[in-house]
Length: 121
Image (tube, rainbow, N blue to C red; front, side):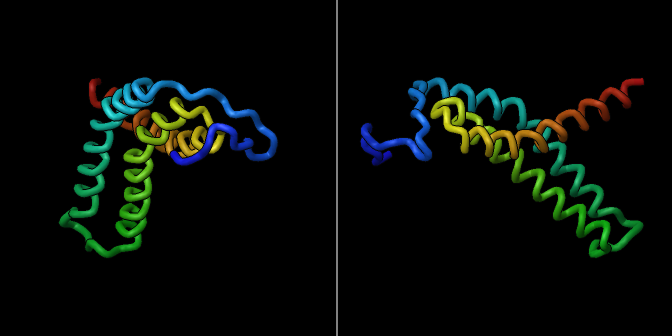
C-alpha cells in the first residue's frame, strides 16, 4: 500500500503490527479448502431446485431462491479472502467484513452437515 508508516490511525486508534503475508495466504487457503465443497453443493442444489420440471422457472419462489442463492454464493466466495486479509492486517473493518460474510457461510456449511447427517440414517 502507499501509506507511509507515520500516518496516524483513524479516530486515534493505534495501528496493530501486520502479520506476515504467508500467514494471510495460509489462512485464505485453509478457508478456501473449507468452503469449496459447500460452494459446489449450494450451486448444484439451487440449480436443481430452479430447473424442476413440475413448475415454471420464473415463479416467485424460484426468483427468490435465485436471489438468495446468489447472495449466499457471493458471501461464500468472498469470505476466504476477507478472512485472510483480516488475519494479516488486524483491522476492525476487515474483521467486520469477514464476520459479515462468514456468518452466512457457516450457516450454509451447518445446513449441509445436518442434511448429510439426516441422509445417513
